[in-house]
Amino acid sequence: MGASFVLMFIAGIICALAPQDFIGHGTSYPFFAIGRFLLACATRGIAITGFVMGMYRVRNNIYRNQ
Image 1 (tube, rainbow, N blue to C red):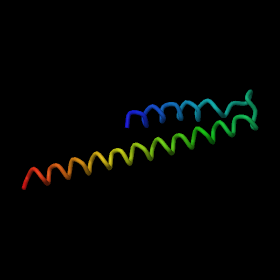
Image 2 (image 1 turned 180 degrees about the vertical axis):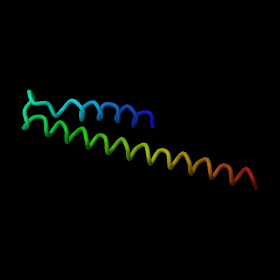
Image 3 (image 1 turned 90 degrees about the horizontal axis):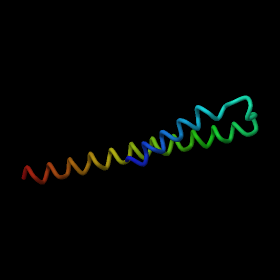
Image 4 (image 1 turned 180 degrees about the horizontal axis):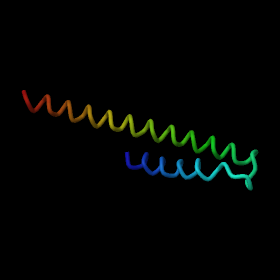
């Protein structure tokens, strides 16, 4: 989950800095697209990791109560 937060930070910086006029449209658009892809992967990683951690806690609480 920590790796997903780091990836999200890096993707946010790429998305913020990629669309610059001095870089040019041909170069900045692929950087922006890569940044958005990394952002989507990081968001998905956080969601899946949180779900797995939540299910682990639920399962352990059920077994403890029996």
